[in-house]
Image (spheres, rainbow, N blue to C red):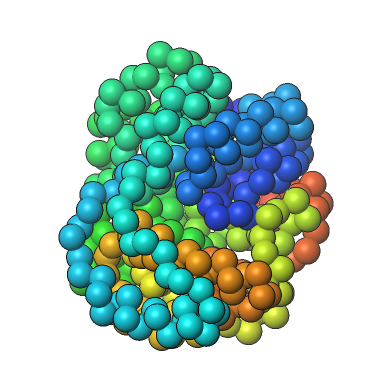
Length: 349
């Protein structure tokens, strides 16, 4: 499917608000492919978003699901004590740090019911039985991986394609296992290195992701063997995105560094450094989704106040190169840049 796109760009699923039906439809109508993000939504909300997207475009689009994580049993007590200071600052009560499965079974039933043509998975591989259910419904299963070993595992279970997420990417790393001893939770491969290593190991369509914001980036990963480029950060400031105003302003100022943190959710994710990350990243336990549920009220209060210092400002390393525009304009600009980059390859004889 991805090698048949008019323009081989995929809008990454960005959970927590940035991805909207309007953004997915706009990218899809412009010749790319969009993914809705089901992460942290109820099954009913996901069904509504699928229906809304289908109203906006008659073209195929996908849905991304978070694979449930095992309860690590990590001690969150010290982290909770430090987080209390932010709860007092924003005058909220902390959330309940409970484990949950993100309503995964119910949302899988929704995508099967709606016969979503492409379903991707983050945080781990789906079970072989889930892959079979999708294929029986006529859907393609795509798995997001961060290492060659994870790519092989996904291929062995029957994945139809892989998203290769380099360490440059914004948001959560799609690690199959989060090693609490490492800030990034596991091995860190750049997108081009990961693309070449995986291409030598598995025979599947590969979609490259990680810090891609320019048409030349798209051309580069296509030249390296990808069938498409998945971009998220460049769409955070799109007119159709649901990115909060505080997040948009922080992106536009482009004054902050990016780094990995577990402080917000309990899993490593790349975002712009703010006071919350400075205060809570060190020692944050590998405990997803408990920390995500615990810090939820603080994030919401910070966003409501227009304050960027306690919200998750997810963004890739190249975020200063993103800009304000409609999704259609962004796609058109990417096309022009990609063509220019491809033309420069004529120098190779």
